[in-house]
Image (cartoon, rainbow, N blue to C red; front, side, top):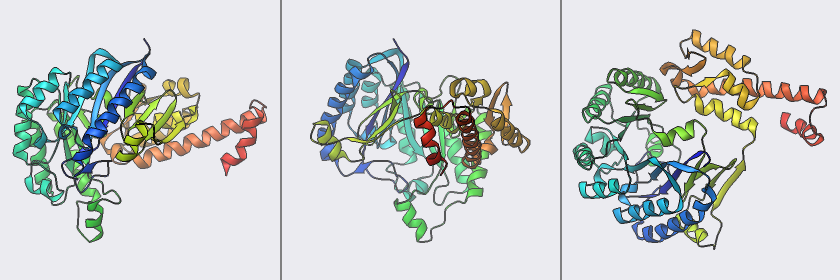
Length: 409
């Protein structure tokens, strides 16, 4: 068998739409679930044979709210995946869920079908904060859902939390973290609220509603990193923390540049040297799978140069970080300018070295967009210098030499 593969299934249906959400999700369209299910099953059947040389060691059912999709449909999907793909014996199967849409009976059946990781959108332990962004559950429902998950013998639980919610204070955020810790999850994802264009939250901000500012969010983030470390949760990515052995295998594929296939409307893939995505439209997706319309939204072959940029962008989201000879070996690029810049960052407390590996500190993660941008600029300068040197030495094919002036514009 070949390399391992991740599989993602997108379920876009929700009970209601949260004010901050810009993911492709739909509320009030339950009547389209059956047709969408038929399209998903057909798409799975068509895609499986293309990945016959890969072993799938992570399956992630995301959304939307997959737990709202219905137990019967989820069981059908899992059965189809097992039939059409080769799964590893220890495959990680994650289901995203909201606390209001799970119960013990449902979770028991899903666990027997292979779901062994539950990722639950707790977001806050303060009901007024949940109401402020139109979350469809209460904290009491989170407690009940966690209890049901444990009774169903699901031993790998993630809880999502958001800092920076409307009306949130330093004290209420800390209370939410402590409440989450009291539920003893194996994994915690703590995200800073971002105001995405076109969302109801963005409209509220435009009308003058105040949210916690960047400094307040930064203070909450740094406190959280320290508190979770004290509680035994290792930070392994900007927003993700786990007990030993419970890192998200599937999400690590994204950050480490490993192959994955996405199925469903708006799903993305990185497979066979290409990155591609499907249309963000359930109706078009359904028609397309039936053969009546195009479902491919974008498709691009990723050259090695771009993979080198992704190495910096994605690996530096993790505490595993980057390493000189890994970079040189995989992308044939000079690491010296990047090492010099990382050393500058180290003096400011933004990076740290562990052996030969460089990674951001929590303070560095707060500035990571800017810092990675600076590293990418250095990489581009180095790439251009190498290309010009090859041109002078006559080492580039004529087609590439002709393309160089256009690249420099």
